[in-house]
Amino acid sequence: MRHSFRTRGACTVGLWFALLPAAYGAPCGLANVPTADILAPGEYCGANSTYLQRGAEGDLTLNNQVGITKWMEAGYDYSLTAKQGVGNVKIGAPVGNGAVGLGVQGLGDAREWYVVYSTNNEVITPFRLHVGAFIPQDNVAPYLGIEFPVKNSTLMLEGVAGDDDFAALGVIFPVCKGIDAMVSGIVGHPGGMQVYAELGYGLQF
Figure 1: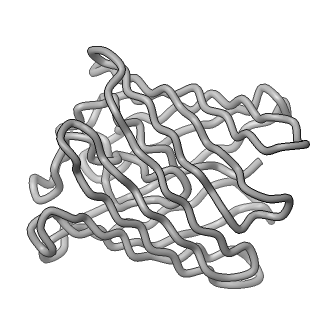
Figure 2: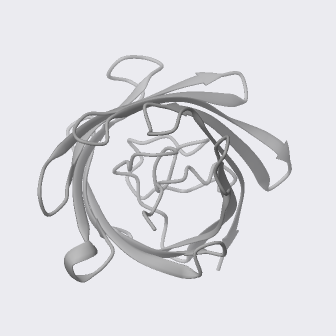
């Protein structure tokens, strides 16, 4: 099971580097690509998510992420469908008008590294850009993510190049206090279009 980089938009994250805005600021990442954002120490973000595709069994996943220090977060996602989970760790630091992040998901031969640079929303106002690359065992897959705020929601555009290249368009919007929803349409996967849906929530310990 591949870890997905959920936005967890419900968390009003006090990101430790003030360069990156908190509202809908993607502490872990967009729907499919990671960002350099880091959860504040003691902040927990959870989500219930699923991928839907015609003719395929849907995947229901419990996503968990927590801020460890001001420069590190860690998490564990468990698939109720596949009955297996995968952990992840990410470190980040402010650089210029944004931040750089380095992370890993999985262990052993199944692990996958990534590196990413995320801008703040002052570089190309009001957009945020996330430029990075997945670094699995056998190849490198560059990616780009773009966030664009629209009133109290955020539009997201994502693209990944490489063997499993795809593009996605999604939106994050509030459902009620403390709970946000995210829906993303993904094209390019074998078998046709996928839809990713999530309900996210957060706590501060």
